[in-house]
Image (tube, rainbow over the protein chains, first blue to last red):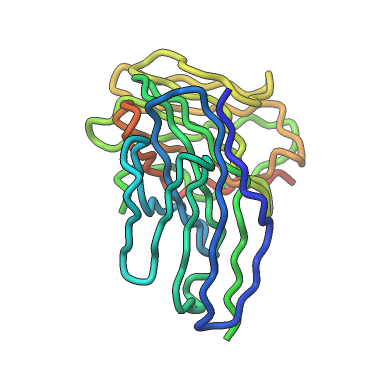
Length: 115
Length: 113
């Protein structure tokens, strides 16, 4: 069975600090997909990034970067120079390769960025 | 804008009542998912449909039911409502292929009084 673990329930940082959100997944599939979503205080769920299991290249988008390591089954998310607007709940998710995909979410990490 | 439309945005009803939540997926998406999010909780998967057929069931109560219609829109029916059913209910859609992200609607906030 697939499973996603986000061990950090809540994190608080001061603005401009770097912060890393951990995500560890379990799957028996050789082809799978990993995602990160952001849920700001306004409540909507926003898709941030998708990563394929066969592509371990790290990705950077502005202040956001993602580190995918198959050897440790981790897909961690780092925010550099955090800002108050980054305060949100962040969810990591895993999808299988099949049509009508099975999507599994982690429990989420609540990030609070203090001014 | 995710392209997923959920109605209504807010719903206030009394215990014991029945409500219907509606979801229109993004154009072209075949899969619809329903999630429940209680206050300060994670996303609880309820049910998934793919191209009109039930694909997977999560922790959905027997008082709840759902369906996906031929035009691919979906409805979630909640009956015999209890105070504990108060939550944010999200609908999400995807193309249904493994690399397809879920796109979420803005949710329906249900308050049972």
